[in-house]
Image (cartoon, rainbow, N blue to C red; front, top):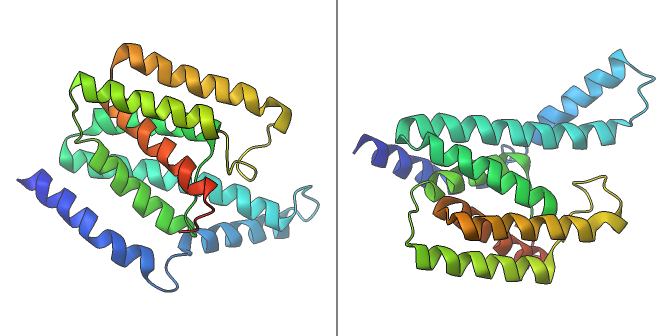
Length: 200
């Protein structure tokens, strides 16, 4: 019951946190302050303040997603599942791209809540393989997409990234891990959102 109450509270506060004016850009503001401080201390730093801010935003987003997801998992008792989802989702997202939220803070809250919910999913093998197959088709069709700002890998190598992403899903077809299958499926759905140009 304690775990269920923690999960319900976490999911309940998600819309409020994501839509509060001024607070949705907390991580972006923090990245900006750190970038400004770096340029003051090291004015000859080769990267511009804008580039530093963007890079720091990516790092801070990942850091807070990992920390918040793991902290919540300690109350739900699903730490192993969350760790598996964190690694699997991050790997596929780096290779395939996908939709992005408007602010870093909204991204952290939404993604951590999503991972917490996904950690409770336990599918039968037949359903696991169905969503594996759907993910595979979506990746072959759309990936990579919306990846321009999140990687420095030259565009000529993007087809190789698609191949690696496809191989990840194929490996999970053989292992049949439902938690990984679900997080691959969610990431694959974000490719459709990115293709339609939806801005959250």
